[in-house]
Length: 379
Image (tube, rainbow, N blue to C red):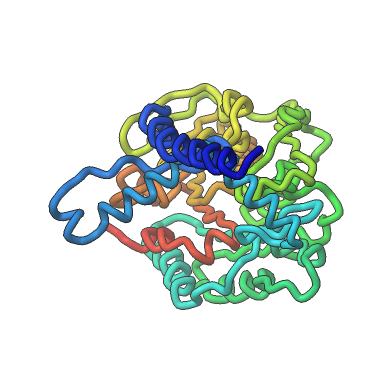
């Protein structure tokens, strides 16, 4: 092939790319959610004089174009593949190995202090017995699986500091050593930031004692392997394929309480269900959503338990696979996620109506989540 023909072919290919990609972009389906990344995609910004003036329009448009670029996921996967070929052992703050582990930065302890103070104020203000479980994540339990001298937050120290700020009105529950002693078991997902159902059960055994009831032995549960191809949030950040997919287990107590009703409210509309398991999530990327469904502001669970005991759980998503164990001990459980509440938690519940309140957060979320402070606001 002559040099002239090569130049013509290169020019034609270049022109096709220049003109074809915009056409593909214009007519391609603009998804709201990236299933592969389990994240919301940017929406097309509205053109206004104010957004042009403050430069937010161009910033938002740049994000929109980036999120909806044709073949975006394949480009991302290709880049990450090249990164691995060059010897990178961490991508998007995820350490690569037979287990994906998150790199956690040092927290802002002033912000953490404000969150703990909010819990203290909550306990002082409401007539309810308050406990706080700050759970370690896999990043705290499996530090020995990280590359040599890899920077990582000392979660044991962080948890001790945070629980040490609690007032005498709050019962701090420290399960770090318990989880560490079980680290050889399948207590955290390999590809996701949550604990497994077994991990949640192990935490439940210790929490049961703190909340004043006897835990149910594991042999009293039927264990259903609901899915064996779960690839979670950590996988979605690095698309590292050399790690085994996870198994989603559902624990059902043979002689346990029955769920009579589940009422859910996302702040806009209310929905009803007769189960705490949402099996349609097993058919999508976010399979962890099988537990309590998607994250939302408020979920209320009523059981056939006749003891009349009511529990309020204020939480992050670690509680979603934990709450199923609690239904065996309460007549009613209300679940609040402050990340999805715009005004006050009293919009949904009166904490004084509950015998006990359990704050349940994982160390990673609690080190950065500023919404916890809402627990200390009263109206």
